[in-house]
Image 1 (spheres, helix red, strand yellow):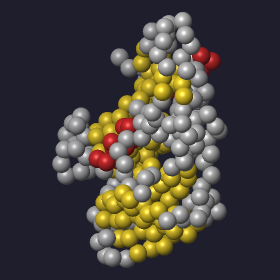
Image 2 (cartoon, rainbow, N blue to C red):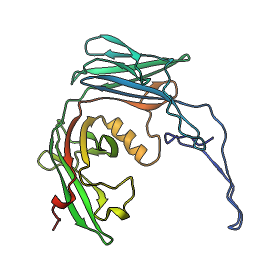
Image 3 (cartoon, rainbow, N blue to C red):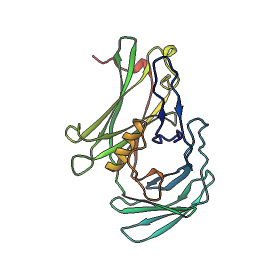
Length: 268
C-alpha cells in the first residue's frame, strides 16, 4: 500500500536482513480515498471534500466540487442543500441550534457518506495568561488557558486551538478528567526568551496576538483528534462507503492575548 498524506494507515513490506543490508520499503498503489471535513457553527456550515495524496508527492489540497452535499436537522426534519463557495467549500448560512441532532450527507461518483452528531453549546474561557518558566537551556513562555466545563457529566471533551496572528499555531484535544471545581486547564510551552535560538514554528515576537478557541466536541471527535496526534487515521466518523474525515457541530468561544515578553511574570 502506498503511503498517503492525511495520516493514512499503511501496510509496508519491510525486507529484513543483516545490519549491513540497506532497508527497502515497498509500497503498493491504491486509489485515492475521499476526505470529508464538515463543521457546523452558529453562523453556518462549511464542508470540504478532498482526496488523499501519496506521501511521496506534494500535498494536494484541491477541494472537489462535484459532490452533492446536504444537512438534515434530525430534530425538526428540515433538509438544507449546500452549494460551493469561491474557496471550493460546500456551505450555507444555517444557524446550528445547540441540543439538535444533525446528519451530514455527501454523494459523489455513486458513493454515499453520512455522519451524525449533536450540536454543542458554548463553553467560557475564564483566563488566558503567560508565565516564564526556567528550563535548562533558556526561559520558555508557557501559556495557560482556563475554561468552564459545561457538560453535564464526567467525560466531556473539547478541542482547543491557538492562532498566532490569525494563523494556526497549536491545537490539542482535551477532556474534563482533570477539571477542578468545574474548571478545565490547557497549558502549552511556546517560545524561548532568546528568539534567535527559536524555530520559526514556535517563536513569538513582541506584539504577536495569540487567540485561543475552545469548542466542545463528541468523544468520537476526541478519539479522532487523538489519533491524528499519533500519526494515525483513528476511528471512522462517517458511515457508508470508505472515506476519511469528520463532522462536528459546536459553538466555539475565543479569547486573545498580546505577547509582550517584558510584561510576563516569572513563575516561582
